Each structure stands twice: as C-alpha cells, then as structure tokens.
Amino acid sequence: MSDPSPANDGAAEAARRPASLTLVPAADEKLTTKQFKSDQEVRWCPGCGDYAILAAFQSFLPQLEIPRENLIVISGIGCAARLPYYVDSYGMHSIHGRAPTIATGLAATRPDLSVWVITGDGDALSIGGNHLIHALRRNVNLKILLFNNRIYGLTKGQYSPTSEQGKITKSTPFGSLDTPFNPVSLALGAEASFVARSIDSDRKHLTGVLQAAADHRGAAFIEIFQNCPIFNDDAFAPVTDAGTRDDRLIRLEHGQPVRFGAGGSRGLRFGPMGALEAVDVAGADESSLLAHDAHVPDPSYAFALSRLDSTDFSHTPIGVFRRVTRPSYDELMANQLEDARTRQGEGDLAALLAGQDTWQVG
Image (tube, helix red, strand yellow):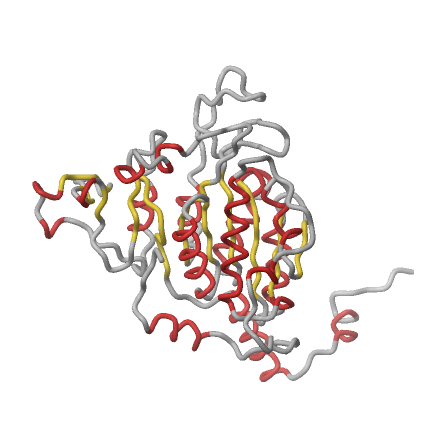
C-alpha cells in the first residue's frame, strides 16, 4: 500500500464515522470478487487501461466488507463512465461532468453508503470542473477516481484538459495551445483532504491506494494514469516500461525517506525558492533530504510534490500525497440540523412556505 500510516489511523477513522444507518443486512459470508461482476458484457477497446482498473476495483471491493446494496458507483460521460454497468451494485451513468453533484446529494443524506465517482480527464476537468472542485473543498464523503488518458477517447481523439501543450489531435491539427491541468495540483488547490495517484498497470499499488481512500472519511481524489491504445497509446510509457520506470517514479510512502532511482540513489530536498529538487543521496546532507509525511495539515508540501511533474515524466510521484482529517460535509450538515432541532424544535414546512416572504396577487 502506498500510505502505510500508523496502525491507529484506521481506528481513528472508524471512531469518527457516524453510527451505521444500514437498511440492508450484512452478508452472512464474505463477498467475493465474482459477486461484484455484473452480467453485462465489458465493452472497451482491446488493450484499454480501463480493463485493468475495473479488475483492480472489483477485486478490491470485497475488502470493504459491506453489502453490495450499500455500494454506489456513479459516473458521468466518457469511456470510463461505462464502469458502473460492470459492477453488480447500485449505480448510475449520469450527466456529463455532473457525477460529483449527484453523488454529493446521495452521500450527504445517506452516510451509511460507500459512494464512488468514476470520471475521466475530459468529464471531470472540462464541463465538470466546477462540480469537482466544490465537492473536494466541501469534503463530501466521496471517493473520486479520475481516469486520466490525456485524450478524449469516446468522441474519437480530440485533445483534453490534460493533453500536453503542442499535442496534435483531430481538434488541434497544428498542436494544442492550452496549458494542461495537473489533476493532483488542482485537487490540492481545492483543499481536498485526501489526494493520491496510481497507474492502471500496477494492480498492487492501485489496490493499496483504493483501500487507503476507502478508509478515509471525507473527499478522496485519486488520479489514475490510464492508457488509451487507440488515440493516445503509450502516453505514460516512461513510467510504465520496466526499463525506465524505476528511474522516474517516486513512490511515496508515509513516514519513509523519499528515494528513487537505482538502489534508491536519488532523493528530494527543498531548493532556495521553495520548490522540490531531485539530488544524489550520496552527495547531499542527509538532514536536508525529505521523508514523506502525508499528514501535514498545510497542503503546500503536497502541492510542491505535485509540481515535480513534467512532460517527460523525469520525476513523477505516485501514492498518497495528502491525507488529513477534517469534518466531512455530511457530518457538518447532520450536526447543524440536530442543533436547529434542539433550539427550535421540528420545523413546519407549511408555515415556512406561507411565511412573511410570500404574498398574494389579486
């Protein structure tokens, strides 16, 4: 797992959860991966990274140890958005970019449910940009998986909000002029309480990050590098090919020194202007080298990690960037409603509708 936090973290998370409102009895026996596979034929292009993500997701779900009826998977529009069809639970293939909004209403009113949002770089960061950042800043108890293939796949290969500048596509025949979004930086800028990144082809790592997100109370955002073999093949080859990945991937583990490269020969330290820089461990002052702390309250450190990204993937962190505790939206809302009932008693809807701010015409 990418974020081996202290053992008492899980207990602390559990203690903060509201009393269960589950309306469906727990399963008598442990659920299996097979039970989370629907009867729908899986339809993505051959070689699509979505297959690997789906398989990892389905194999992880039994670890939640909740009835399938309490698992909700909501998606927007795009190739990734087909995933709810393939999971045997409740779910919804919703509106372009609006999955976080629909999921917010559900998570805020049903704290007993485990609500997962499946989205892509176009769905989440273009038409859905505002919906995503507000769900994160409110700390709604959602788990948001953003499949990032740096292209519009469903509509056949136009550039997306994460396509690199200069990208030649059907909609940018002379190269994209846009500066791309960094999804992890965006999530951290929105004050998300849990932010992580993984890769479709690294099942063990992805499963560990999913488990860490599931254990987190509040908004959890995971960017997943996902290969599109038809319209943007090998976009992430530098960090997926066995010959190059170890020199480029920075695997973040809470409480552990940040090391990468052959034999852990490289590390990170802060430069004079506050940006992180990669250095040779052998020639550096040991006290200046970073150990990863995902629990730093201020997001500046995690943001600095996210800014290491470059178009050539020379230094690419994966794992849990940030994991901090703050009240979730549903908890705050429930407390506010309870406080109002205590002070004012049960409300009268008819009196409210016919109150002083209404009038009759004629």
